[in-house]
Structure formats: structure tokens, C-alpha cells
Image (cartoon, rainbow, N blue to C red; front, side):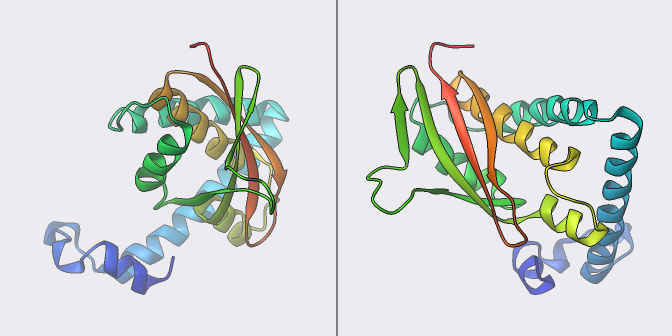
Length: 182
């Protein structure tokens, strides 16, 4: 996110003087935090191997459940995605996506509903690019858990996210929810 966009979202005059900095200091701090998270993710993967993804997925899922407690409950997936986009979209900009020729965003298959999510300006992807780490690692799984936890909380269902494509400018994921409660 460009500093001009941050200035529009967070007004520098509203930053308490006690914090001892201006908005430019926060951008520098964000870059340091991104490097820290990248290093931590890499170290976790070295120590835990493939188990690192499961660990951070569960942490992200908890975070998603907590974040979604302030959202309105619904049983409509498109409504849930819109609501989640309003709350979560500032850090993880995404939108529902459908291939040309597909009528609706959602596909119904038995007791499951499937929707494709296109992630554009994602803080996780930007962190991985800044630190030179590959996608599909622990930080990506943190985001997957976050999305699943949020949708489970908002809709009171079970969900999962699968990776369709990762890239430097966007990632495409498939969110599948299973009806019938948790």
C-alpha cells in the first residue's frame, strides 16, 4: 500500500503525540515488521518442516474466528464474502472471481458451496516478495486459516481453502464450505 493511500486511511493528525512519530515512521516500521515476519516464517519452516504450515494455519484460523465475531451472521456465502471483504479487505484485498461463462460466483455441489477468491494487494505476498521467500509457505497458510476461521464464524459452517494459483500480482484460491454445521 502506498503511503498516500495510508494517509487517506489513517489521518496523521489522529496519531497520538505520545507515540513519538509521524506516518513516515510507521511505513519504516512496517517494512521492518515485514522482514521480521519473513525471518520468523523461514525459521519456523526450518525447525518444524512441513508442520509449520499446520501450526500457522491453526493460529490464523483462531485469528479469523476472533476477527469475525464483530461481523453479522449469515447463511449467504456471497453476503459473507462481501462483509468479510469490508473488514478483512484492508490487509488482504480480495474479490470473488468467476471464469467467463460461469453465471454465478458460487457453485453448489451436494452439501458444499464453492467460490473462487482472487487476492490482489495481499500483505502476506508483499512480505514474501520483500524478504525473498517463496509463496505457499507458512505465511500463506496463516492467511488461509484466517479466511477459513472468519467464514466459519460468520456462517457457522466448516470451510477450507485450496490454492489454485500463486503469482507476483495475484493469487487465486478456492473456498469450499460444507453445509450441516460444524
